[in-house]
Length: 82
Image 1: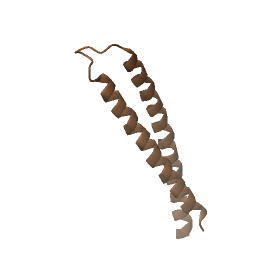
Image 2: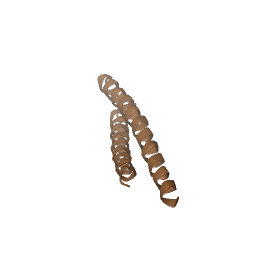
Image 3: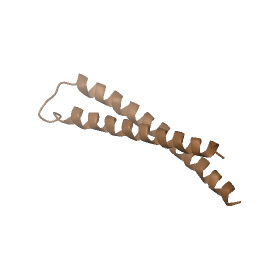
Image 4: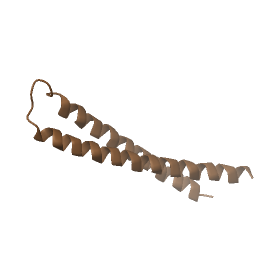
């Protein structure tokens, strides 16, 4: 009985991390599009650091999506092992 509950929790962790990974990759793609749009705008003294901030935002969310996808795969493998 204890092993069954543990197995269910591992599966729920896999699903949760998979969902977070999908959300993070969508945010990363949106940030990437904003960076591309920001690079098309001529820089001025008022928006000179905007591309740098958006580039950092893109890298941050991309890394979160990678880590959570790996955690999802890890928990799925744990779930498959009896």
